[in-house]
Length: 343
Image (tube, rainbow, N blue to C red; front, side, top):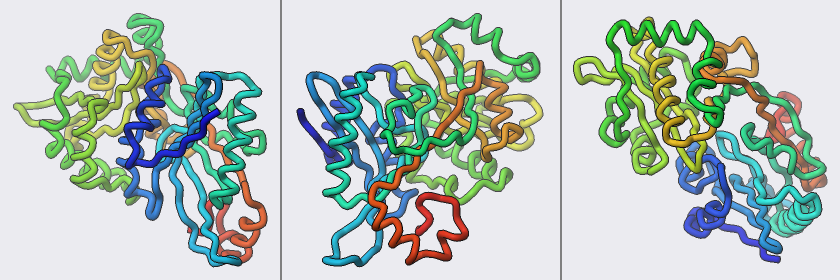
């Protein structure tokens, strides 16, 4: 039995363990966690690994210190999944192995001073099924998923007719999708992205800067499909492709071109390209809200083959300190239904 805990400084060791898994997406990799590190103030990406008899249990998360002075000034932390779809993964579904992994994790958590965990599970992996026995699992929202494993015809037949009509409209207006290295187009895309976020009144969390897009451009997993007019970018989407799994990350379109269905076009063409290159699934994500009538979710569902449930998990590990936090931040606790209510 071996137990490991790596951070971004030890990203090579982190990646070496991930390379022993099949069909996992980019959300689990240290580069993705590094990308979102600045979005979570005071947090440090970590991965906890349990290895026994050739089986591996791996769990990436953000480790965040809680500002508390209790007793002998022992440090306390919470852990939470980074933005996206993560949670624990295992090379084995053996119940005894999973139980042993969580038992060791509990011991590590107690020693480390961790009081709670918040998990965003991965809908493609259904990994809420291997969560800790005390984790409270909650359905959060639906996400759009495209199943490429059944081939191009299956994909085309599952796409709604109204989406096909929008794709045909774009083609009739002589628009074409071009796959291009994101590094070559990132500055143009950034301008369109910022226009799109302003138009959609997006939260500050999605106000990504040049540094963010520079990091994106350096990842081998980053793929970009753009639509141009007179050599000028007018719409496009960023995807991650990793180990047979694609993830739709960001998309943007100039306002005056929205009527042409360009987002439908590049999503369709990216999907066909992914199928031809052996990608098995794509996770398009969900909407801005939990509603099934959310406009962004409906768009993603209309450009995917099916929908799947996305779950979150909540677990209080140290009830004594959590109760102390609830008392200390009673007003925040009263006005919030979040597990991490004190930040």
